[in-house]
Image 1: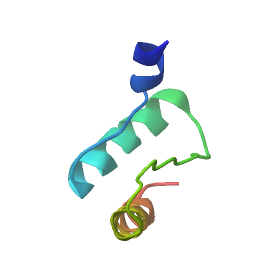
Image 2: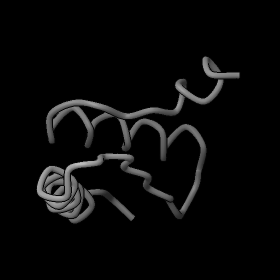
Image 3: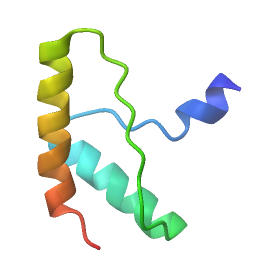
Length: 61
């Protein structure tokens, strides 16, 4: 079960995350993503959300 869930995990630099998400979107044809960031530290979570917002702006669609 964990392996199944982790096959959809996207982790890495902004460039790596953007690349992985673009490939995922192209291969599935989805038009919506649900992002989960189980990060306990509030500052780290906010930083991650800001980085994800920057990635999102560059995604096609």
